[in-house]
Amino acid sequence: MKEDIQRNMGRRRFLGMTGVLCAGCALGGSVSGAALAERIVDAGPVGNYAKDGVYDKFRSQGFFVIRRDGKLFVLSAVCTHKKCKLTAEKDRSFYCDCHGSTFDPNGKVTEGPAKRDLPHLSTRVNEQGHMLVYVFAG
Image 1 (tube, one colour):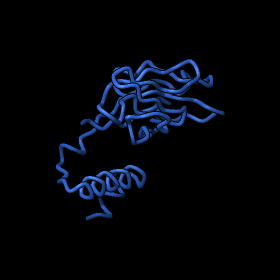
Image 2 (spheres, one colour):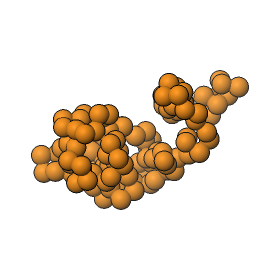
Image 3 (spheres, one colour):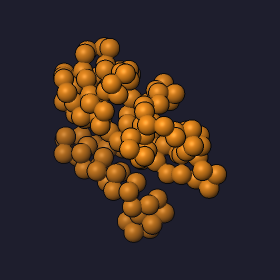
């Protein structure tokens, strides 16, 4: 069964979900199907992200699209401390207005109270050349 699930969703997403399950179990909690609920957001054509920078158009939906050195990636726009929305700064770092946590351009915590780095979200490009972002609800 594990192989069927892995084959249908792709190795990266399968491993990511497995990591969420393991993390939840390690914390002494149980992980229900609701904890793994995700939504897929169409972030538009990849060509919309041609220049290096932080694109915050999808901040309200929980993520930033970032292009650096010709590579695209997506970071959560939600602080890992108390789930407040982050602000992208001009130096490409991220700031939490709620409690003052800061994160570097790669999502690593530079100042607490947050202790966990920002998650990198899974993406894929569909047949139309649009970037799809997998955002976990929760």
